[in-house]
Length: 140
Picture (cartoon, rainbow, N blue to C red):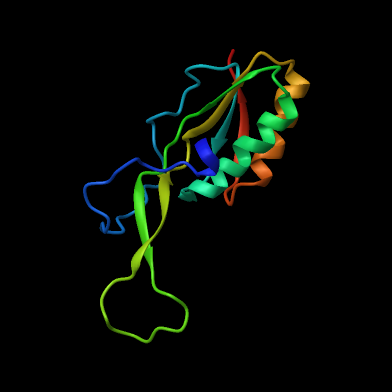
């Protein structure tokens, strides 16, 4: 985000963590807190920092200083990878990227300050950048 870098923690205590399990559904972060419209995940998955940043950029480009965008998730789970031609063994790979575990029901983005048509279009463009099924929600 700043200086061309993706969303990532400034420093981490442990660079190699357990994979963990994804929950089916969550009630945490399931309501709109800031904006009038939001993009809610319909399935559980890991979102990479570059996927979140790509979706944020396409929304920001669409609204063109017209509205306000909130990113409700932050990728702070480190993932490792070994290079493609390395054989089995030799321990775990080096730090590759950061992910955020997103459960079904979690609001990922919120947007405000736009008409309903514009907000829906911006969120639709962002949804195309994400590897999960999403739904556009509205504050009533």
